Image 1 (cartoon, rainbow, N blue to C red):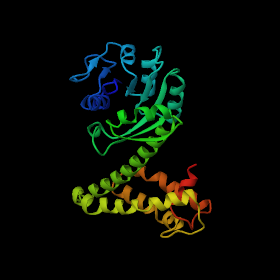
Image 2 (cartoon, one colour):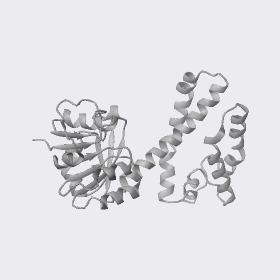
Image 3 (tube, rainbow, N blue to C red):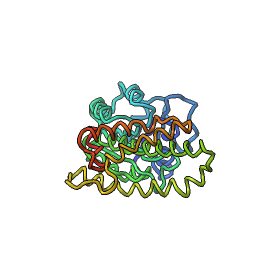
Image 4 (cartoon, helix red, strand yellow):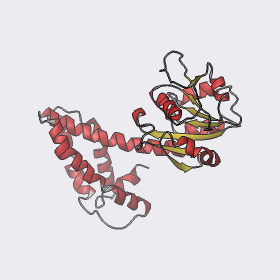
Length: 281
């Protein structure tokens, strides 16, 4: 028999998680904070309270809106002997604090790197951190949701990885959105620009990331392989001036310009973009 599972929270993502467990044959108990606002899930057992839902299964997956909601939901519930898997987006400190707030339970924190439609498919993955034995015991159960990737016993690590990846995504999309705003301001067809130039350019630039990471792990004395920071800082105002002239708000680009100027002022003008990482912290 497959491991019985409880899913707390039936928003779009929670529903997708419950559906994946049901499709894989897991006895699945579900609970939603707002009764009547969740979709029908054929084969699921609906609990009337969170306590009833937690008591129903040894594996309890939590997918609610924010950390505060998770704490309010679990407060006062006996979780002894349960494995609590919190897939609610949060911070590393929130994950560590929540682990301490569920004594008697094994705690895993998770970061879902997927949208709901990807759950149960081949391209989604979920980061996990926390109780190693609990992860090993339920790795196969969790694999029905997405490819599981365990990143360490520190409960805060999954959230750190998650936030790091999301930060890269938002930064990339921010630059791309600024680029599209520029071409749109000149009535250039956005689809043609994106397919023929933007995607190939961004893809090619991503190839420099492994070297940046290598330089961060093992600093070298080599100078910039291409344009050094002094050259880039000197020309960066052209990006901002063009945006203003085209009626595009340069707010997404201003912070990078300030960081370039800081790097040059700090004596890193002959280095490349990898030097900026250390200036951030």
